[in-house]
Image (cartoon, rainbow, N blue to C red; front, side, top):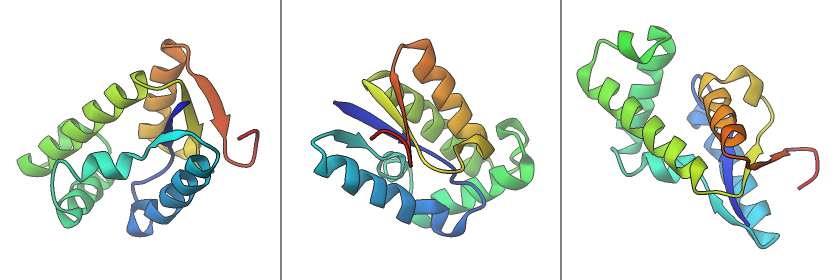
Length: 125
């Protein structure tokens, strides 16, 4: 099954990469093909560029209010690609804390709109 991993990123140390990587490893071991959004963001800039862009988003609270044009473009591109990736999957896997993430909420809404199975960390995997 194709599974999109979703959870909090903005404002967390290392953009919560260790939690995403651990979930990817665990789900892959169970035989799933896992889409990790950190791998998607790598297509749009260096890890530092992406970290700066998402830090800018945290303080702007809205993509349209990000002052840096480069950061705004990165965030828009990453979120657009993430939502497209969600649509390509059979399920979405929600990491702990997803309910505190605007991006994860958008991804979940997209998943529900397209009939994906919902899986949660700590629940049925």
